[in-house]
Length: 140
Image (cartoon, rainbow, N blue to C red; front, top):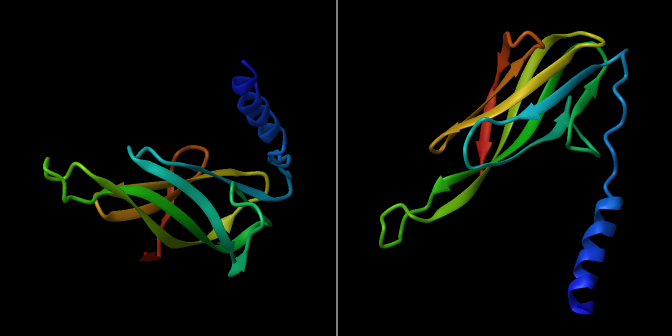
């Protein structure tokens, strides 16, 4: 019983150390992330206007033009198994998107998608209108 208790306690303590997302500033634009792609592992903020970010869970920025770089990790077929394409591996891509009209107090959604080996990102407003797509894609 004690052997089971230790991992459970460690799990609960690690949950307490997670930093909460800060409250939204109404004087700034906010960008959340989503991905409808099965096998997508992560969409994360990497850089804002060429500067690395401390917290990759969101973008929060003053109104106006900005360049966003995101990291998108997703599954791709690796092949090599007896079942053909039964194995998978993860692909990591860094994608840049520019948008000139971010508005204060508005919430935006940046959506990461992939079709096989080809990733893309799209920026939507709160009414789900497409505002911008990736400008460059670099995968490793």
